Image (tube, rainbow, N blue to C red):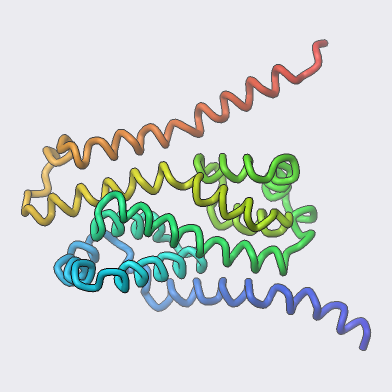
Length: 245
C-alpha cells in the first residue's frame, strides 16, 4: 500500500499537464487548427471586424482568452493569432492584447509544470539539461533572451522554466517584455495585410512594397538575424573565458 501511494503521487502531480496535452491533441484531431489560417481569417473578415467594432471590451477580452487558451494547449497558432490581433484591432492594441494572451497562456503551463515536473529537468536529455543550466545560472535574463530570440521551442521553454522552479514574477516579466518586439512586428504585418484586403487590392507582388507590409517584413528579417548574432556573441564570450594553453 505504501509503495503504491508513493508511485501514484507523481502521477497525480502530472495529471493537469497531461490534461492540457490531451486537450491540445483533441484540438488538432477535431480540426480546430483549420481556423488558424490567414485564409480563414480573410474569409470571415467582415464578421470579425464587425464584432471587433461593436463588441468593444468584450471582443478584446474574448480575443485574449482564445489566445491564452491556444498557447496553454501549446498548439501551433500563436503567430496567426498575433496577425489576427493586428488585423482586427490595429498594430498597437493588437500588440497589447496579443501580449496579454501570450503571457497568460504560457504562465498556466509554467505553473502546472512547476507543480508536476519539479526535479525532472535534471534527469532529462541533453537539450533539456542545457536549458536547465541556463535557468539555474540566471533565470530572468536567460528567459528574456529566449523570448526575444526563440532558439528553443516555446512550449519546451515553458516546461523547463517551471521544472526548475523559476519565480513566478520573474517568469511573467521576462515573458511579457521579451515578446514585445516579435509581437509588435507580427501585429503590424497583420494590420497591413488586413488594410490591403479591405481596400480590395489584388494579391500580387507589388503589395510587398507597400509600407504597411514592407516595414514589418524588414522587422521580421531583423528578428531572424538575432539568433545568428546571439550565437556569435556567446561563442566569443566562451573563447574569452577559456584558459590559455
